[in-house]
Amino acid sequence: MKLACQEHIVPGETDLEKWRSISALGYEGIELRGSGDEAFRARLPELREAARQGARYPSICGILKVFVGDFDAEKRRDAIGRLKVLLSGAAEVGAAGVISPAAYGIHSNRLPPHQARRPPEEDERLLVDGFGELGEHARKEGVKIFIEPLNRYEDHMINRLEQGVAICEKIGLGSVMIMADLFHMNIEEADMGAALVAAQSRLGHLHAADSNRLQPGAGHTDFAAIRHTLDGLGYDGFMALECQLKGDPAAALRGAAQVLRG
Image 1 (cartoon, rainbow, N blue to C red):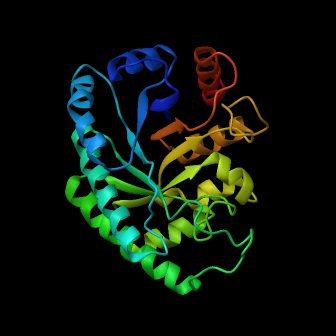
Image 2 (image 1 turned 180 degrees about the vertical axis):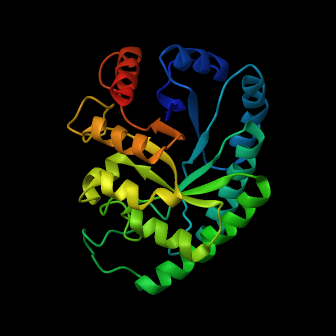
């Protein structure tokens, strides 16, 4: 397993400075963030130059205000278009793929008003169609789209790894996989290790944060057990930090890497 860190918590100003900083702290990659707009496209020359000088960008996390599973059709089309921009950008900088949840914050069955605006069958159809279209674009670009399950308070469609795998299987493309976020899994999965094992055929990427959304080692998540499970699966992909940092950033990142490596 290789470690990465989302770019917004990496010390440094330029992309190359961030790479030198994070690699010195024990990480092998930086996870980029983007909304699939002109600002992201404008970054590509600097990112390509940093990559030529050794920087490694294994993944891009979509930070969008619209989603594949949006209730509004125009917003769904906007989200798919933006994610296609990120997928093409991933191919340019050598990333494996782009991460996207079904949606974030549009509805929760666990919070008022409780009643969603679509039946589950329609949710599924839209997700299969939307992520299927993205999967075709990803396949042509030689990258992947990673579906991220979120906890029940942030999304009502895909909360557990098995649900994400089911969407992948219905689409049937190798370019559509799931991303396992340990923070969300800590809420939703009865057995995190068993969930990872069951999802291994579609597991393409991971996010790491402790139980309190701080860096690994600042909460109660059993990272040693998770690492043991991933080693048993022979997982050789990336795990990227997506968390807030408590304390000095460099010290927090160095400590998190030690926790994750066991």
